[in-house]
Length: 249
Image (cartoon, rainbow, N blue to C red; front, side):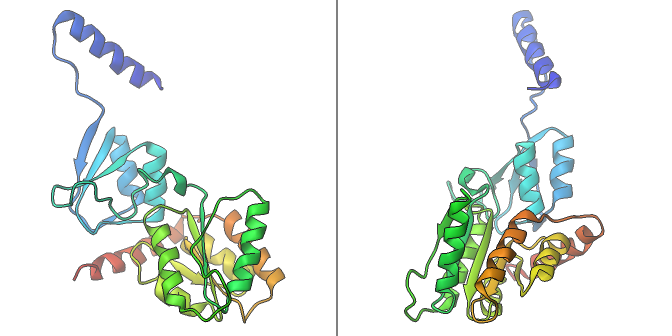
């Protein structure tokens, strides 16, 4: 608790003792009508001591905005048009297990690699959610790519890794989910760029394209690399603006 919060509490107590009205609460609420919520929006709200942001259905919350919401302790509250108890896509509130949790998925072509990645992550003490496939029998990659992407988009998991034969097929599926930036990578260089320059939140790998040793190293770099922002922030924001433009048309 910082000094400003302590001062407000003291003022409230003194006001009650004197029978005076309490000063305005810091639990201010802000309503937004836009389709896209960015990190800059969250930081402006935090500067105004906003603690709740009322949002419309279909709001797109960028990954950086999601992180800022958590850091600043600001909750997203669905507008009255949203059913009671329905959570907004991208909201971190109520998904405390999402921080650091990794969503894993694969079809039959990526099953063996996915299992090896899972073992490696678990040995490092990382939290993993495996969305299948659970055997090497023939399976459809869209089913698993969708589950991984949705888990990342709704905040259940912090990031996702999907493996199929080529990698790009699952990326096509994942990128259909609002709030997802999926990148197909083939080496450490592309992994690093996907994270640093774009802020990608789902990695797709080709089980028939790259070797297991390289895949494990790529996952390590993926998890240890963060979005650098700066000049790249403007460009990534434009990606989200395109998504917002065509959502719910």
